[in-house]
Image 1 (tube, rainbow, N blue to C red):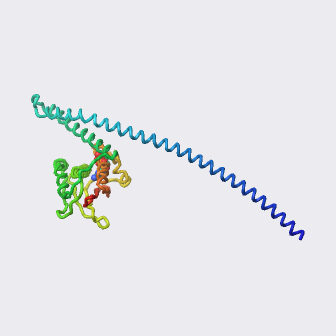
Image 2 (image 1 turned 45 degrees about the vertical axis):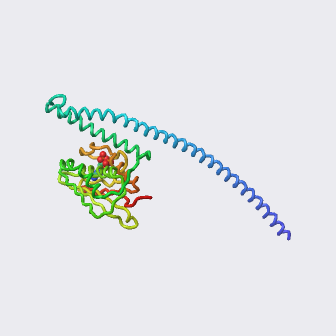
Image 3 (image 1 turned 90 degrees about the horizontal axis):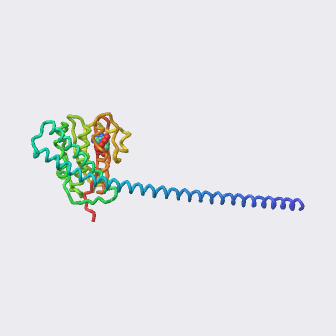
Length: 292
Ligand code: ADP
């Protein structure tokens, strides 16, 4: 009996000790949790502050870009207009050298105007301000219109452009001008990165279910292709594949970013497949239905 009482007292003592330890552990745990919570709150505050600073910087950058591009348009229009008049010989006959210089001014002014237009388009799209004028259009005719504008450029590079779009495809619901811009950007690239004697082919097909209400366009070339490491960044703004050839400098890296934005505005998407030295295939999709 005495031993039992003794044992009971010892056990009670141990229980009290354990309770005290448990209370201590609990307190320590609560203190650590509180400290962590405070740290997390402080980090959250710092992140929110950094985030709003970044947003403000982004907004300022967009406003600056938009202002600069608008300001560039007017002088460029004047330069192009005056150059055109000089080219006609209205102010007197031009020597061969003068005519060549005037031609260079005209070419560079056109390039600069294109750059300004691309920058304006992109900043509009990024700000969600680009409005589409959508209607039901025949895929083959849109492609034909884009190709028509590029026949001279293609001929200069001895690249053959083929419109292989079937006549029986359903109409697509899109802004014709914007999709022409998409096709022009893709076909221009295809010509630019394809050597003499190459081919650029435009095709389109109805997609397999569950996307059977979409048409997928493809611009394929037999050009230099894109290195695998560049594939994920190819649609990024200002991205250009590093290359030692002169094509590196001929462009701005905005064309594909614009293509992606326009396709996505239509509820479609873009993708690319490529093999170095063999060629590239750029795809974009458009819906065949009108949203109600
Ligand atoms: P840009 O053509 O003005 O440089 P893009 O945004 O249209 O800008 O294209 C970005 C880059 O993607 C190009 O500089 C080029 O390196 C690569 N690229 C685009 N299209 C092709 C193509 N068809 N074949 C090979 N490379 C291409």
